[in-house]
Image 1 (cartoon, rainbow, N blue to C red):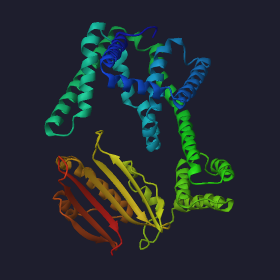
Image 2: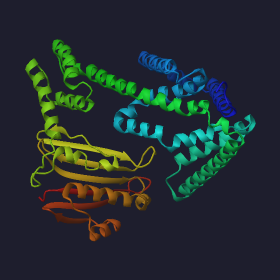
Image 3: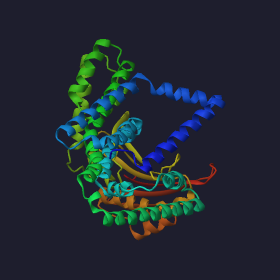
Image 4: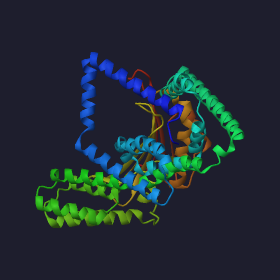
Length: 442
């Protein structure tokens, strides 16, 4: 595209209006003004500027390569700039979130780059309407409906509003789609053209090229964080210098092992070279042992590597780590909503260095009225855990007790199964927690 379309011009206009309004109110409001100044100062920190320069250099290099092999041309400059601002730079300000679950981030990004939603976005943006209609009606309405649908999901009335917003958004998309089909019949050459293919595929190609850089960038941040904190746990500066070199040599791109090693030296202080070398050997030995998929006798517990992945289908994978004395544990939670205080599904494992002794899965609901919404998901997760750990399933009595929120204990293959329901009334809205545990009888 050689110029901005009416939808993009309308979006830019609204952004400009919001910026002008923010500046106007900041002149009158000292607190807002100081907050804006603080944000601007934070943005111009050397680390952020350096990161933006690195990202920009890599993107320019990627574009240059695509240009040389005649995939990219200057008609894609606008598309590339939008992708650069909203995805490449946008991910930099989400690094803390990405670091917590980088594996799923990369998988989801790849999926979203090749799934139906990209084509649907292309359809929506394929043909725009006149500027005033985009400015006054479409952009404000779509933005308002999207915001309302994202923040309303607590009470029954809010859920109804959320469903109405989804219905209106779906209806608007249907209108876009019908308009898209009409335009195709009127002028099929505008859709079936090299220009249209470029508009569709260039953002996808840029995303695929960017992900390896982002992965190494996260690895660099990981090393930087560890190296800065080394001096808190190792006093000898000569040992610190050698440690940095050995961490890279021993663990390279294995971020989980870097974290596990650092957790170890926080507890076991490194005071000489022998202890340092021993720490690397120990972590590598533990990693090899954890990945041996030999069957652990059920009386001893569960194989560590298998137990870490029992709830992989629910995107809950834990990392088993040393805690204190002979105790090892791992835990991972996933949020069930996008709220500030979301309901969570949490998986716990606990035991010793050789085997996991206890498996537990908890469902915490910040609003007790959400039980009907999430109980079936929780039962499915419980059944998955039971199936993977004991080759068994919840029976009808178990399921009835869970739906009735009645505590129960049972045994299966000499293991104790415990379900507990607890209600909390100290908050504004009554909350609750459901817990299911598999362990040795005591």
